Structure formats: C-alpha cells, structure tokens
Image 1: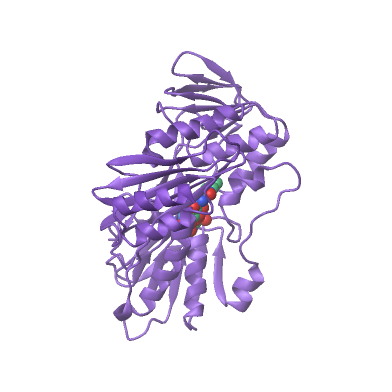
Image 2 (image 1 turned 120 degrees about the horizontal axis):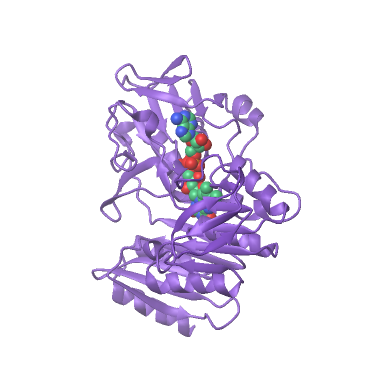
Length: 406
Ligand SMILES: Cc1cc2nc3c(=O)[nH]c(=O)nc-3n(C[C@H](O)[C@H](O)[C@H](O)COP(=O)(O)OP(=O)(O)OC[C@H]3O[C@@H](n4cnc5c(N)ncnc54)[C@H](O)[C@@H]3O)c2cc1C
C-alpha cells in the first residue's frame, strides 16, 4: 500500500461495518468509502429483535442511522441489497454483482449466519432469528397467537421464549444438552438459567433432539427424539451461527471458523482487516484466538480495524474482556470474560428472592477469567475491570466477599 490509502471498502452493512465507516470519517479520511450490504435494509441493531421488537404493540424498528446521514453527512457510497461475491487480494478489488470495486483498505464485516436444521426447508412457520425480516415474521406469528416451539435454549432462543410467554402464549423449548447453555456458562449457572424458564411457565425439555417437522406446507408439529411430539404454529430454530465467509473462498484470506486475524485485526492480505462476528483474532489479554458474537466487541472492532488500517505503523492490538447481556423474562443475564474454566464458584446466590442477584466467578489457573451475573447490573463491570487487570483468583474471591457483606 502507498503512503496513505485512497479508497476504503467495507463489506457488511451492520454494526461492525457501520462503526468502520464512521471511524474512517472520524479519523479524517476524506476519500471514497463504499459500504456493501447483502440485505435491502439500512443498518439496524440486532439485539432488540429478540427482545422489545417481539413485544405486543407497535414495533419500533431499531435503525442505526438514516440514509441521509450515511450518504449525505458521511458521504458513504452505500450499496445495499447485493452481497459481495468475491475478494481479490491480488488486484485489490471486491466483486459486487457486475462491479469490481477497487480498495486500498478493505474491512470484512459480514457477521454470521444462523445454523438451520434439516427438514425445515419450504415449511412455513419455521424460522431462524438473525435479520429484521426474520423478526418481522416471528412477530407476525406471535401476533396471531402462535403455539411456539423454540429449538435450542441458547440466548436468542431463550429470549424468544420469554417474548412469547410475556404474551401468555404456550412455549416449549427443546434443548439437546442435559443443561441449557452449559458450554457458554457452565453447569451450575446453566441450571439456574433452566430454573428461570420453568419459573416463567416455559416447558423446557432438555436432553431431547428434534427428529423432524410435520405439516402440510406449514408446520403443525415437531417430532422429538424421545418419541413425543409438540403441536406448533411457530418454530424458532436457535442452534447457533457460523461466520459468513463463503464469499471469501479462493481469496487467499485465511479462514478457520472465521477470518483469521492478528491482534491488530489484520488478515495478512494487503490492506485487508476483519471485524465483528466474522473475525477470529488474537486477543492479547487472554493470549488466545477468539471469535465472539457479541455486540460490544463487534462495534469496537469495526472502529479499531479501520484505525489500524489507515495507519498500520501505529496499529494497536485490540484487546478486550468479552461482554454480553441477555434479557429473559424480567431478568438480565450478563457475562464477562471466558467460560472455559477450571472451576466455577457461585459467590452470591439470591435465587430465593424476587429479582435477587446471583454471581458466579470462573477461575483458570490462579486467575479470575470470567463472571456471570443474574440481575447484577451494578457489579458486572466491576468484575470486568478485575479481569482486565488480570486479578488473581484469591483477590477476586476477597472482592466478592466484601461485596456480599457490604
Ligand atoms: C436476535 C439477536 C439478538 C442479539 N442479542 C444480543 C445481546 O443481547 N447482547 C449481545 O452482546 N449481542 C447480541 N447479539 C449479537 C450481536 O447483535 C452481534 O454480535 C452483532 O450484530 C455483530 O455485528 P456484525 O456487524 O459483526 O455482524 P452482523 O450483525 O451479522 O452483520 C453482518 C452483515 O453483513 C451482511 N453480509 C453477509 N455476507 C455479506 C456479503 N457477502 N456481502 C455483503 N454483506 C454481507 C449481512 O447481511 C449482515 O447485514 C444478538 C444477535 C441477534 C441476531
């Protein structure tokens, strides 16, 4: 790349892509910036789609910015409704339809796609929940009073179940593992999450898989691996997502469950960076590669990738303590750090009291590496700070004791 880049192309017009183009302008970049999005929609926020957007009443679409702001004020060349089909790192172009758009800096921010289940193709009433169009379809079914089956007791599926229960609709959640979220939060806290479903009238069935869907053009029931069946008008499949990297085949960019990047989010392809759910980067704070599907890191990485790309000689590693939240019924669940722990200790257990706070800490070696709270909005960021400062396990337990006694 020459002394200073002249053209920026960002692929993926959602959170990470939006933050990338905004950061470019904020950094004083005045050249052409193209933002390419596969969806027809302007960038919008995804977390509300499985939360407030499903509530009764008039839905508020969570747009991030207006078209005027993006094209007028920021001067972005916005190309929506057409996916990029290839990246050529030799000629430094991105292919969109019949166009080959040249770049000096390219940011890959194509996010993740939901996994699906076999047997659901062409059957109306079976949805994943990733896009605004998905959310509109799920909402319409809830408005019609759907008997709802959620496949997968992960965060998004559990939020959909909460939304349906808020409306008083019957909901069954089918989870293949014996405990929900066991990989994300461990056994003890997974059990507590299961208890939240049951306390709110959701029929949670663990250790059971989906054997098939039945219905004539439209889903009518879900057959389960234990031989039972559940009647359903709406099925929401929430069995995880995979990075949207298909369009990068043959590009020379290294792919391994995401776009592989160094700590500065550089891919190794000249001028090519990645950000958000699609990026697997080296997180120096934990000294390991990570690919997160969390709002906060996607936003931060979009901005960090562009700043580093515009001035690679001053590039700064992106390090973070992962953070996400999820809203179930009237409860906020928050997690900071990593759940791959040698030990999990529940240090506060207010499960008996309505709205009671629960806190679990995660140990790796002699270091605090994770914290999960239920209704712990006032403490979670304190634990994030402890993890950021590489606090020892003993000191973390002391801190928790002092909080409990305060
Ligand atoms: C329903 C839902 C609820 C969530 N709730 C929470 C929450 O409570 N807390 C939390 O921390 N996180 C939550 N998340 C995760 C969070 O929204 C994501 O981490 C964030 O959206 C990632 O942003 P991104 O820009 O990297 O990817 P995405 O938001 O996935 O955007 C990628 C964009 O790229 C587009 N694209 C894909 N391929 C191409 C291509 N070839 N060419 C052009 N465009 C392409 C896609 O259409 C998409 O618009 C939630 C996600 C969902 C779906």
